[in-house]
Length: 89
Image (cartoon, rainbow, N blue to C red):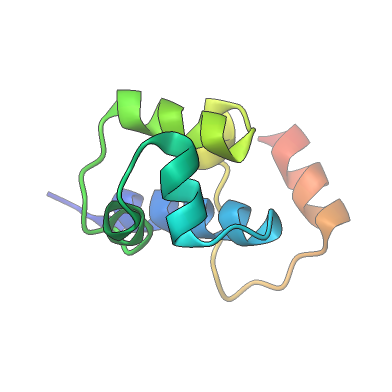
């Protein structure tokens, strides 16, 4: 199985979590998960279910689709660039 999508979704969760100033522990508490599970998701180690993705999206206060609006980690995007990218996608 190609794990690229797991890493991309995990990286997107990490970006959104950090933008909101949340630790892995606080995101886990909000979503009903252990912080180590959040870490595994962010590193692309867990093949996360859609139900758990929906819980994480709710805890991050974003639409589920925003977890799939990822970009390459090495790209430096401003918040305006991210907004434009989300609209285009």
